[in-house]
Image 1 (cartoon, protein in one colour):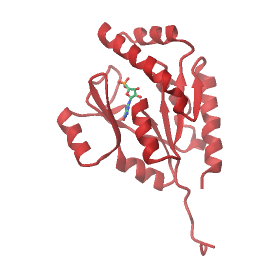
Image 2 (cartoon, helix red, strand yellow):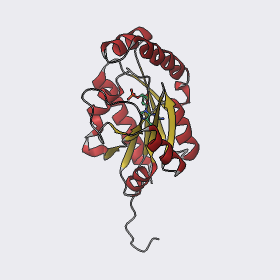
Image 3 (cartoon, rainbow, N blue to C red):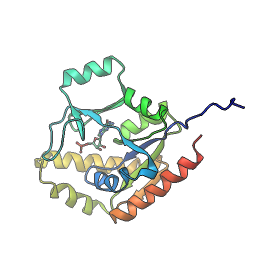
Amino acid sequence: MDGGMIMTKKGLLIVVSGPSGVGKGTVLKEFMNDPELNLSYSVSMTTRGMRPGEQEGVNYYYVSREEFEKTIAEGGLLEWTEFVGNYYGTPLKEVERLREEGVNVLLEIEVDGCQQVVKKIPEALTIFIVPPSMKELENRIRGRKSEPEEIVQQRLAKAQKELELSGQYRYIVCNDDVKLAADIIRVIIRHHMERQF
Ligand code: 5GP
């Protein structure tokens, strides 16, 4: 026995990926604040510019390439990648601190980063969100109207490659209907919370 010591369950590490434009952010918003899921969103570091409506420390920590490379050298990132010309990475300390406190931490990262996470933390709960079709994905990316054609093409090419790797994830959820996709992910997280010890 543990002599009556109170043991906190370590929080889950949840990785959500999906091609850009698939609506990850919209699906996540549906359940992120559900108190029963006890979730915290891991804010990534990036060198890309801020999009309209985004906020420092909420969507990302926006840093220079120099700052990002310094953080890599210091071992401060759980994973990192270069995506369409910019660096993206997950700050390590915050993830560990929250999980130790029993909080379930959710990372919204791309496929390369997820592979790095699974190597380090094999029990990570990995979920891939797919669009109903490639055509629908293209419409959604173009609908955002924030980027030049060349970048749109790069994002579409990357999306195609990412979809091919979706089989590496433990769960694949289709975002045809936002509320349904969110409910499915809720059920997946609840299931794993009950099994966590
Ligand atoms: P966006 O520029 O659209 O915000 O993000 C581009 C891609 O980078 C998305 O697929 C997003 O999931 C991914 N991403 C965001 N933060 C991170 C991170 O910290 N690490 C990795 N590997 N990918 C990230």
